[in-house]
Image (cartoon, rainbow, N blue to C red; front, side, top):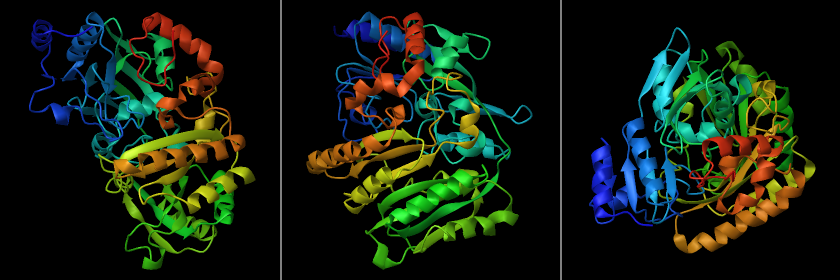
Length: 456
């Protein structure tokens, strides 16, 4: 079906935000998403300013048979924040954050980024787990699970979610938490965007103000990866470190001879006392020969911005992801082999630790199923020239094939691409059937299907 001029006029009358269609001066800007690989042309983009606008947009899409995409921070690498010939609900004008410092909670609108959120909570010396790039939206990251610099100490983002307001496929606004619509609340914490549009999310906060963080660089060597695994799994939960395999960045802290060469790096965030900073440096020194380092005391929000300049909107991305209980010899070998052929300065492998507080939540307490996993592997190509797409996608797929035998069957839904729909069941594991039950209750017609989809 299509949408008519008359129906668009009705939609414009029903929303306080902006309705953008092809031919409007702002159309090309409105249809653009973070990953340039997805150059789609929606029929309608609704820039919502409140939950009422979201409801009107969902009802319009249903009435006119338009596929519906939901866009928060626009970082969906799989491109689920846009769609050809459909309707996009864009939440980017809904970015308010309200902090309750006494209760140590914050409620943020669904279009807020982690930069917005961290700025608001840091004013009170508070924080929660949220990503590694500040321009990432809180909604998509949290609904998929949410890893980040505070995960070992504070749990996943979804573990800190205490309530959400959701516009359902019926256009109804529901509040869900542990008491109200508890089945929906359970599903939101790891089940992705399958169940509705989260127009606001409320989080538990933790007293974290200044951290000791940054990046320590080493030669590309399997021994560094092995030593990193031993360090991070034995370290106190205040120490979070992400293993990176990248090409050496052109930064002053790294000697020029390492620029553009494959390296290992430990991207570290220590939220413990300043008196222990030297102990952290000693642990990092023990991983291998240090060839460059930037580590300093900084406000927590700053560490979430350190890769923003390297990963601006408009690059081309193709990612994969897997979980594992250990960094096995086979996994180390695969990471080293593909690290040697890393295709661009922007490409990377990141191995996130997800133990500590992440393991204090049971495998069926939330929809995030892999509570026995200790690591989450994210890897893929990022490039600037569309002519290089075929090569970079093929490289990432070959990497995935090499790593898959050495990891668990499923992976993190936020690292999956559009061609990973066959992995949905194993990604949700023992929780899949329960998620389908919730899906049938709240979205029996699969209106919210542009995601790692749980078909009703």
